[in-house]
Amino acid sequence: MSWLTQIGAVTLLNLRTLPQRAGSSAVAIVGIAGVVVVFVAVLSMAEGLITAMASAGSPDRAIVMRSGSDDEMTSVIPGPEVDVVRQAPGILHEGTRALASGELYVIVDLPKRSTMTPANVPLRGVEPITPRVRIDARIVEGRMLQFGTNEIVAGRAATRQFAGLSLGSQITSGQNVWVVVGIFESGGSVSETELWADARVLQGAYRRSNSYQSVLVRLESAQSFQAFKDWLTTNPQLNVSVRPETEYYQAQTVTLTNLIRTIGFSIAALMGIGAVFGAILTMYTAVATRTREIATLRALGFNTVSVIVSVLAESLGLAALGGAIGGLVAFVGFNGFQTSTMNWQTFSQVAFAFTVTPFLLAQGLFYALAMGLIGGLMPAIKAARLPISSALREL
Image (cartoon, rainbow, N blue to C red; front, side, top):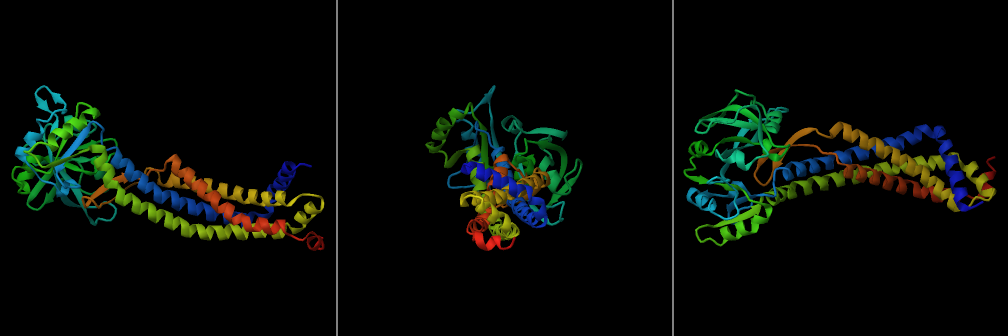
Protein backbone atom coordinates (compact mmCIF):
# COMPACT_ATOMS: atom_id res chain seq x y z
CA MET A 1 0.00 0.00 0.00
CA SER A 2 1.48 3.37 -1.07
CA TRP A 3 1.85 6.15 1.46
CA LEU A 4 -0.68 8.29 -0.47
CA THR A 5 -3.25 5.51 -0.22
CA GLN A 6 -2.57 5.18 3.50
CA ILE A 7 -3.00 8.91 4.05
CA GLY A 8 -6.28 8.92 2.11
CA ALA A 9 -7.65 5.91 3.99
CA VAL A 10 -6.82 7.28 7.45
CA THR A 11 -8.09 10.77 6.60
CA LEU A 12 -11.41 9.41 5.36
CA LEU A 13 -11.72 7.38 8.55
CA ASN A 14 -11.17 10.56 10.58
CA LEU A 15 -13.85 12.43 8.65
CA ARG A 16 -16.37 9.58 9.05
CA THR A 17 -15.95 9.65 12.82
CA LEU A 18 -16.43 13.43 13.11
CA PRO A 19 -20.11 13.13 14.19
CA GLN A 20 -18.89 11.27 17.29
CA ARG A 21 -16.93 14.40 18.27
CA ALA A 22 -19.51 16.99 17.20
CA GLY A 23 -19.40 18.92 20.48
CA SER A 24 -15.66 19.47 20.69
CA SER A 25 -15.44 20.07 16.93
CA ALA A 26 -18.15 22.75 17.15
CA VAL A 27 -16.14 24.55 19.85
CA ALA A 28 -13.11 24.78 17.56
CA ILE A 29 -15.20 25.89 14.58
CA VAL A 30 -17.02 28.60 16.53
CA GLY A 31 -13.77 29.87 18.08
CA ILE A 32 -12.01 30.18 14.75
CA ALA A 33 -15.10 31.69 13.11
CA GLY A 34 -15.25 34.35 15.83
CA VAL A 35 -11.63 35.33 15.26
CA VAL A 36 -12.18 35.60 11.51
CA VAL A 37 -15.31 37.74 11.97
CA VAL A 38 -13.43 40.24 14.13
CA PHE A 39 -10.34 40.15 11.91
CA VAL A 40 -12.26 40.79 8.68
CA ALA A 41 -14.67 43.31 10.22
CA VAL A 42 -11.94 45.53 11.68
CA LEU A 43 -9.80 45.47 8.54
CA SER A 44 -12.88 46.21 6.40
CA MET A 45 -12.98 49.60 8.15
CA ALA A 46 -9.56 50.42 6.72
CA GLU A 47 -10.57 49.15 3.29
CA GLY A 48 -13.74 51.24 3.38
CA LEU A 49 -11.83 54.36 4.35
CA ILE A 50 -9.27 53.79 1.60
CA THR A 51 -12.07 53.26 -0.94
CA ALA A 52 -13.85 56.45 0.11
CA MET A 53 -10.65 58.49 -0.08
CA ALA A 54 -9.36 56.93 -3.30
CA SER A 55 -12.66 57.44 -5.14
CA ALA A 56 -12.59 61.15 -4.20
CA GLY A 57 -9.56 61.76 -6.39
CA SER A 58 -9.29 61.84 -10.16
CA PRO A 59 -6.05 61.42 -12.12
CA ASP A 60 -6.90 64.45 -14.28
CA ARG A 61 -7.37 66.80 -11.32
CA ALA A 62 -4.75 68.55 -9.18
CA ILE A 63 -4.97 70.45 -5.92
CA VAL A 64 -2.98 73.60 -5.25
CA MET A 65 -2.22 74.69 -1.66
CA ARG A 66 0.18 77.01 0.11
CA SER A 67 3.72 75.66 0.11
CA GLY A 68 4.42 73.58 3.21
CA SER A 69 0.77 72.73 3.87
CA ASP A 70 -0.21 69.07 4.19
CA ASP A 71 -3.96 69.71 4.12
CA GLU A 72 -6.51 72.38 3.30
CA MET A 73 -7.06 73.39 6.94
CA THR A 74 -3.53 74.79 7.21
CA SER A 75 -3.43 76.40 3.77
CA VAL A 76 -4.24 79.98 2.73
CA ILE A 77 -4.08 81.32 -0.84
CA PRO A 78 -4.94 84.99 -1.47
CA GLY A 79 -7.51 85.71 -4.18
CA PRO A 80 -5.02 87.38 -6.57
CA GLU A 81 -2.84 84.26 -6.46
CA VAL A 82 -5.86 82.12 -7.34
CA ASP A 83 -6.28 84.27 -10.46
CA VAL A 84 -2.63 83.60 -11.34
CA VAL A 85 -3.16 79.83 -10.89
CA ARG A 86 -5.98 79.98 -13.46
CA GLN A 87 -3.47 81.20 -16.06
CA ALA A 88 -1.24 78.11 -15.78
CA PRO A 89 -0.79 75.84 -18.81
CA GLY A 90 -2.35 72.40 -18.75
CA ILE A 91 -5.71 73.49 -17.28
CA LEU A 92 -8.75 72.37 -19.26
CA HIS A 93 -10.85 75.24 -20.60
CA GLU A 94 -14.49 75.50 -21.61
CA GLY A 95 -14.52 78.43 -23.97
CA THR A 96 -12.57 81.12 -22.15
CA ARG A 97 -13.23 79.69 -18.68
CA ALA A 98 -10.42 77.82 -16.95
CA LEU A 99 -11.79 74.84 -15.01
CA ALA A 100 -10.20 75.88 -11.71
CA SER A 101 -12.20 76.21 -8.50
CA GLY A 102 -11.01 78.33 -5.58
CA GLU A 103 -12.31 76.64 -2.42
CA LEU A 104 -12.63 77.22 1.33
CA TYR A 105 -12.75 74.50 3.98
CA VAL A 106 -14.33 75.20 7.38
CA ILE A 107 -15.91 73.09 10.12
CA VAL A 108 -19.47 73.21 11.49
CA ASP A 109 -20.83 71.26 14.48
CA LEU A 110 -23.68 68.86 13.76
CA PRO A 111 -25.03 66.01 15.92
CA LYS A 112 -24.44 62.42 14.86
CA ARG A 113 -27.66 60.55 14.14
CA SER A 114 -26.62 57.51 16.20
CA THR A 115 -25.49 59.25 19.39
CA MET A 116 -26.57 62.90 18.94
CA THR A 117 -23.08 63.93 20.06
CA PRO A 118 -21.48 66.90 18.25
CA ALA A 119 -19.26 66.11 15.28
CA ASN A 120 -17.00 68.23 13.08
CA VAL A 121 -18.60 68.28 9.62
CA PRO A 122 -16.70 69.90 6.73
CA LEU A 123 -18.38 72.85 5.01
CA ARG A 124 -16.71 73.59 1.68
CA GLY A 125 -16.96 76.92 -0.10
CA VAL A 126 -17.29 76.38 -3.85
CA GLU A 127 -17.66 78.55 -6.95
CA PRO A 128 -20.11 78.42 -9.89
CA ILE A 129 -17.41 76.65 -11.92
CA THR A 130 -17.08 73.84 -9.33
CA PRO A 131 -19.68 71.46 -10.88
CA ARG A 132 -17.60 71.45 -14.08
CA VAL A 133 -14.45 70.67 -12.09
CA ARG A 134 -16.01 68.07 -9.79
CA ILE A 135 -17.91 66.31 -12.58
CA ASP A 136 -18.29 63.12 -10.51
CA ALA A 137 -20.72 64.95 -8.19
CA ARG A 138 -24.40 65.18 -9.16
CA ILE A 139 -27.53 66.46 -7.47
CA VAL A 140 -29.91 63.57 -6.71
CA GLU A 141 -32.50 65.40 -4.59
CA GLY A 142 -33.57 69.03 -4.64
CA ARG A 143 -31.41 71.42 -6.65
CA MET A 144 -27.99 73.05 -6.79
CA LEU A 145 -27.46 75.99 -4.47
CA GLN A 146 -28.07 79.50 -5.74
CA PHE A 147 -24.78 81.40 -5.54
CA GLY A 148 -24.86 84.63 -3.57
CA THR A 149 -27.24 83.19 -0.96
CA ASN A 150 -26.98 81.16 2.27
CA GLU A 151 -28.06 77.97 0.53
CA ILE A 152 -26.06 74.76 0.82
CA VAL A 153 -26.13 71.27 -0.66
CA ALA A 154 -25.25 68.21 1.44
CA GLY A 155 -23.47 65.00 0.50
CA ARG A 156 -25.48 61.77 0.65
CA ALA A 157 -23.18 60.20 3.27
CA ALA A 158 -23.46 63.32 5.44
CA THR A 159 -27.28 63.10 5.43
CA ARG A 160 -27.06 59.49 6.62
CA GLN A 161 -24.60 60.15 9.43
CA PHE A 162 -25.60 63.58 10.76
CA ALA A 163 -28.94 64.98 11.91
CA GLY A 164 -30.64 68.07 10.45
CA LEU A 165 -29.60 67.70 6.81
CA SER A 166 -32.91 66.91 5.12
CA LEU A 167 -34.20 69.14 2.33
CA GLY A 168 -35.43 72.45 3.73
CA SER A 169 -33.56 72.06 7.03
CA GLN A 170 -31.69 74.99 8.50
CA ILE A 171 -28.22 74.80 10.02
CA THR A 172 -27.08 77.46 12.47
CA SER A 173 -23.35 78.06 12.80
CA GLY A 174 -22.51 81.06 14.94
CA GLN A 175 -24.69 83.89 13.62
CA ASN A 176 -25.10 82.25 10.21
CA VAL A 177 -28.12 80.24 9.09
CA TRP A 178 -27.72 77.90 6.11
CA VAL A 179 -30.63 76.29 4.26
CA VAL A 180 -30.28 72.80 2.73
CA VAL A 181 -31.68 72.91 -0.82
CA GLY A 182 -30.10 69.84 -2.38
CA ILE A 183 -28.38 66.50 -1.81
CA PHE A 184 -25.54 65.27 -4.01
CA GLU A 185 -23.70 62.01 -4.60
CA SER A 186 -20.13 61.49 -5.81
CA GLY A 187 -19.75 57.73 -6.17
CA GLY A 188 -19.43 57.05 -2.43
CA SER A 189 -16.28 59.18 -2.13
CA VAL A 190 -15.22 61.22 0.89
CA SER A 191 -16.75 64.29 -0.79
CA GLU A 192 -20.17 62.95 0.19
CA THR A 193 -19.33 63.77 3.81
CA GLU A 194 -19.18 67.48 2.96
CA LEU A 195 -21.61 70.37 2.78
CA TRP A 196 -21.15 72.87 -0.04
CA ALA A 197 -21.84 76.60 0.12
CA ASP A 198 -20.99 79.65 -1.99
CA ALA A 199 -17.31 80.45 -1.36
CA ARG A 200 -17.93 84.22 -1.50
CA VAL A 201 -20.72 84.03 1.07
CA LEU A 202 -18.56 81.77 3.24
CA GLN A 203 -15.68 84.25 3.07
CA GLY A 204 -17.92 86.93 4.51
CA ALA A 205 -19.46 84.66 7.13
CA TYR A 206 -16.05 83.57 8.45
CA ARG A 207 -14.27 86.89 7.82
CA ARG A 208 -11.80 85.40 5.36
CA SER A 209 -11.79 88.50 3.06
CA ASN A 210 -10.62 87.58 -0.44
CA SER A 211 -8.76 84.35 0.34
CA TYR A 212 -9.12 80.66 -0.28
CA GLN A 213 -7.48 77.54 1.10
CA SER A 214 -7.01 75.53 -2.08
CA VAL A 215 -7.56 75.57 -5.80
CA LEU A 216 -8.86 72.42 -7.46
CA VAL A 217 -8.15 72.30 -11.19
CA ARG A 218 -9.25 69.98 -13.93
CA LEU A 219 -6.34 69.25 -16.24
CA GLU A 220 -6.38 68.62 -19.97
CA SER A 221 -5.09 65.13 -19.12
CA ALA A 222 -3.13 63.36 -16.41
CA GLN A 223 -0.01 63.89 -18.53
CA SER A 224 -0.47 67.67 -18.24
CA PHE A 225 0.25 67.61 -14.52
CA GLN A 226 4.03 68.04 -14.67
CA ALA A 227 3.92 71.08 -16.95
CA PHE A 228 1.19 72.57 -14.77
CA LYS A 229 3.18 71.95 -11.59
CA ASP A 230 6.47 73.28 -13.01
CA TRP A 231 4.83 76.52 -14.16
CA LEU A 232 3.30 77.18 -10.73
CA THR A 233 6.25 76.20 -8.55
CA THR A 234 8.70 78.30 -10.57
CA ASN A 235 6.44 81.35 -10.77
CA PRO A 236 7.82 84.12 -8.47
CA GLN A 237 4.29 85.44 -7.94
CA LEU A 238 3.29 82.26 -6.12
CA ASN A 239 4.31 80.24 -3.07
CA VAL A 240 2.36 77.04 -3.59
CA SER A 241 2.65 73.26 -3.64
CA VAL A 242 0.90 71.14 -6.24
CA ARG A 243 -0.23 67.52 -5.88
CA PRO A 244 -2.37 65.15 -7.93
CA GLU A 245 -5.74 64.90 -6.24
CA THR A 246 -5.44 61.12 -5.93
CA GLU A 247 -2.09 61.45 -4.13
CA TYR A 248 -3.50 64.08 -1.76
CA TYR A 249 -6.37 61.87 -0.59
CA GLN A 250 -4.23 58.73 -0.38
CA ALA A 251 -1.82 60.55 1.95
CA GLN A 252 -4.72 61.45 4.25
CA THR A 253 -5.56 57.78 4.84
CA VAL A 254 -2.10 56.59 5.90
CA THR A 255 -2.19 57.42 9.62
CA LEU A 256 -5.72 56.22 10.28
CA THR A 257 -5.56 53.06 8.18
CA ASN A 258 -2.26 52.05 9.79
CA LEU A 259 -3.85 52.53 13.21
CA ILE A 260 -6.91 50.48 12.27
CA ARG A 261 -4.82 47.69 10.80
CA THR A 262 -2.54 47.60 13.85
CA ILE A 263 -5.56 47.31 16.14
CA GLY A 264 -7.14 44.69 13.88
CA PHE A 265 -4.07 42.46 13.74
CA SER A 266 -3.47 42.87 17.48
CA ILE A 267 -7.03 41.87 18.41
CA ALA A 268 -6.97 38.98 15.95
CA ALA A 269 -3.63 37.78 17.35
CA LEU A 270 -4.93 37.79 20.94
CA MET A 271 -8.17 36.07 19.98
CA GLY A 272 -6.23 33.69 17.75
CA ILE A 273 -4.25 32.42 20.74
CA GLY A 274 -7.49 31.39 22.39
CA ALA A 275 -8.75 29.79 19.19
CA VAL A 276 -5.51 27.84 18.80
CA PHE A 277 -5.83 26.43 22.32
CA GLY A 278 -9.39 25.48 21.47
CA ALA A 279 -8.19 23.64 18.37
CA ILE A 280 -5.43 21.92 20.36
CA LEU A 281 -7.91 20.66 22.96
CA THR A 282 -10.28 19.53 20.23
CA MET A 283 -7.62 17.56 18.42
CA TYR A 284 -6.19 16.09 21.66
CA THR A 285 -9.72 14.89 22.42
CA ALA A 286 -9.96 13.40 18.96
CA VAL A 287 -6.66 11.58 19.40
CA ALA A 288 -7.63 10.34 22.88
CA THR A 289 -10.96 8.91 21.71
CA ARG A 290 -9.32 7.21 18.74
CA THR A 291 -6.30 5.74 20.52
CA ARG A 292 -7.31 2.18 19.74
CA GLU A 293 -8.11 2.93 16.09
CA ILE A 294 -4.74 4.63 15.56
CA ALA A 295 -2.88 1.77 17.28
CA THR A 296 -4.75 -0.80 15.17
CA LEU A 297 -3.88 1.06 11.98
CA ARG A 298 -0.23 1.26 13.02
CA ALA A 299 -0.24 -2.49 13.77
CA LEU A 300 -1.66 -3.14 10.30
CA GLY A 301 1.28 -1.33 8.72
CA PHE A 302 0.13 2.27 8.40
CA ASN A 303 3.11 4.60 8.77
CA THR A 304 3.46 7.60 11.10
CA VAL A 305 3.26 10.11 8.24
CA SER A 306 -0.26 8.96 7.34
CA VAL A 307 -1.35 9.37 10.97
CA ILE A 308 0.15 12.87 11.26
CA VAL A 309 -1.34 14.03 7.96
CA SER A 310 -4.76 12.61 8.83
CA VAL A 311 -4.92 14.49 12.15
CA LEU A 312 -3.68 17.70 10.52
CA ALA A 313 -6.22 17.27 7.70
CA GLU A 314 -9.02 17.05 10.24
CA SER A 315 -7.75 20.14 12.07
CA LEU A 316 -7.38 22.09 8.82
CA GLY A 317 -10.84 20.97 7.70
CA LEU A 318 -12.42 22.28 10.90
CA ALA A 319 -10.42 25.50 10.57
CA ALA A 320 -11.47 25.97 6.93
CA LEU A 321 -15.12 25.50 7.92
CA GLY A 322 -14.74 28.02 10.74
CA GLY A 323 -12.96 30.46 8.42
CA ALA A 324 -15.68 30.15 5.78
CA ILE A 325 -18.44 30.71 8.34
CA GLY A 326 -16.60 33.66 9.85
CA GLY A 327 -16.02 35.24 6.45
CA LEU A 328 -19.68 34.80 5.49
CA VAL A 329 -20.89 36.35 8.76
CA ALA A 330 -18.48 39.28 8.34
CA PHE A 331 -19.61 39.88 4.76
CA VAL A 332 -23.33 39.73 5.54
CA GLY A 333 -23.05 41.68 8.78
CA PHE A 334 -20.55 44.40 7.90
CA ASN A 335 -20.13 44.90 4.15
CA GLY A 336 -21.71 48.23 3.26
CA PHE A 337 -22.31 49.25 6.88
CA GLN A 338 -22.23 53.06 7.03
CA THR A 339 -20.23 54.85 9.71
CA SER A 340 -18.01 57.89 10.19
CA THR A 341 -14.74 58.64 11.91
CA MET A 342 -12.32 61.49 12.49
CA ASN A 343 -9.87 62.44 9.76
CA TRP A 344 -6.83 63.34 11.86
CA GLN A 345 -5.38 65.42 9.02
CA THR A 346 -8.28 67.91 8.88
CA PHE A 347 -9.95 67.13 12.23
CA SER A 348 -13.26 66.65 10.46
CA GLN A 349 -15.58 63.68 10.10
CA VAL A 350 -15.27 61.26 7.21
CA ALA A 351 -18.27 59.09 6.38
CA PHE A 352 -17.57 55.76 4.71
CA ALA A 353 -18.88 52.21 4.38
CA PHE A 354 -17.20 49.05 5.64
CA THR A 355 -15.81 47.19 2.61
CA VAL A 356 -15.28 43.42 2.82
CA THR A 357 -13.14 42.61 -0.20
CA PRO A 358 -12.29 39.18 -1.65
CA PHE A 359 -8.70 39.76 -0.55
CA LEU A 360 -9.84 40.30 3.05
CA LEU A 361 -11.89 37.09 2.93
CA ALA A 362 -8.85 35.24 1.59
CA GLN A 363 -6.75 36.71 4.42
CA GLY A 364 -9.34 35.57 6.96
CA LEU A 365 -9.36 32.04 5.53
CA PHE A 366 -5.57 31.91 5.50
CA TYR A 367 -5.47 33.02 9.14
CA ALA A 368 -8.04 30.34 10.01
CA LEU A 369 -5.95 27.64 8.30
CA ALA A 370 -2.84 28.87 10.14
CA MET A 371 -4.69 28.49 13.46
CA GLY A 372 -5.84 25.03 12.44
CA LEU A 373 -2.33 23.98 11.44
CA ILE A 374 -0.81 25.21 14.72
CA GLY A 375 -3.65 23.72 16.75
CA GLY A 376 -3.38 20.32 15.11
CA LEU A 377 0.40 19.95 14.98
CA MET A 378 1.10 18.81 18.55
CA PRO A 379 -1.87 16.39 18.73
CA ALA A 380 -0.78 14.93 15.37
CA ILE A 381 2.74 14.31 16.65
CA LYS A 382 1.31 12.73 19.79
CA ALA A 383 -0.89 10.44 17.71
CA ALA A 384 2.10 9.33 15.62
CA ARG A 385 4.13 8.55 18.76
CA LEU A 386 1.49 6.43 20.47
CA PRO A 387 3.09 3.13 21.64
CA ILE A 388 1.27 0.45 19.69
CA SER A 389 1.49 -2.16 22.45
CA SER A 390 0.16 0.17 25.19
CA ALA A 391 -2.68 1.41 23.04
CA LEU A 392 -3.74 -2.09 21.98
CA ARG A 393 -4.12 -3.12 25.63
CA GLU A 394 -7.19 -0.88 25.73
CA LEU A 395 -8.96 -3.22 23.30
